[in-house]
Length: 264
Length: 250
Ligand SMILES: Nc1ncnc2c1ncn2[C@@H]1O[C@H](COP(=O)(O)OP(=O)(O)OP(=O)(O)O)[C@@H](O)[C@H]1O
Ligand SMILES: [Mg+2]
Image (cartoon, rainbow over all chains, first blue to last red; front, side, top):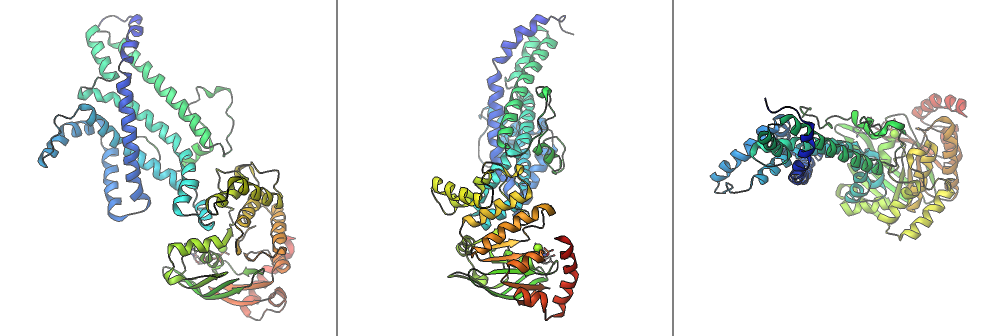
């Protein structure tokens, strides 16, 4: 099917697809923001073992980690307005982007919650005791001792989470959002050069993922500069398996991966 | 001056401390001995409320708390008058040696940075780490980390420093340098309560030795009294078990 392969199309598609990059990035940024807030709210009752809220956040995690993002998008886009109609709220005129960012945000929140919980718990309890013993308040101990270290521990997980989110946004076209994948579909249909559009699309996703990963790796190095790290030799640029103290530490942590289908 | 009266503590059904009373004078060094599980760590941790005592009273200097109705503010006060040196050092890993010592001066005592840095530098020089000010804990040996821990405790000018087995996580060749530092500050008249298994050190440095077993103080006295002429059978047994070992160590 489609027209014969013509490499020239790849180059002419690139700028056209990049016109919609803003939409993709808006979904990513909006969802991350929503996700971090949601993640924090969900992580708290789990960390402090608050009875009822803890069960609720467990249900939240099960739902968002245990069902496909596509189903979540449909449920929120088609189901939420119907449900809210029952309580007299009319969402039928709300922009699609609202539903898209809400869904991706809550989805990301489930993984962010586990990231936050695991990172905070990975900072050893002895340091908190040392802070208390010196007369610091719980808030001071958290903000000055736990948080800075938890951030460093969280970055590699955060990096995976952002990249997973970036790739997931490609499903937003199913609700008719003109982000990059949606645009690629249209270009493909118009020109019948499907393969070329998808190659161009893949190149763009790859470039963004790669850039994000490098930036976050730099952030991680900065945040964990107090830890001894083996110097990785020449092949750092394409060495996606990063080695650092925290990396290896994370492998020993339960529940930190952002991979789908993890333990809940 | 430290005064513990009738401190009790249970974990669930297991009573770990039973009506412990202990008086420590200003400038005195009290060493606590006792078999594993006798409640030594728990007692130290009750003094600064890292464990909440079930009942009893704690007085540090002119400040007194009744454990059955201690409030948040009391606990902070108590902690600001005491300092602790931990078995596992518990340094702040993301802070340099200097920053570790400065931290509480800045956050708790609210000293200006310049003043905090000056005092912390002095203390680190005193424990022999003047050349490691900017090193992160991950770059320090256990002995060096523990000496930072001691400087960090001294910085707050506490009424008492609580040591919980400060050398037992160290490689044998590093034990000496840490004991040396503790010995030096003991000479300066800083009040200390030290849990240790280093018998030689206890004999040298302690003004008083307290022997605990099963959550009670079995016997206390000068090092001579407890080591040479123990009165209680449990103390004798413990010393027989531990002393030959101590001879081999040095
Ligand atoms: N957080 C806790 N929860 C339950 N039990 C505890 C807890 N901490 C200590 N215990 C129990 O209390 C008893 C006294 O413990 P503690 O650590 O004070 O002994 P110790 O004299 O310091 O022993 P060691 O010489 O081995 O350090 C032990 O039986 C221990 O199992
Ligand atoms: Mg102990």
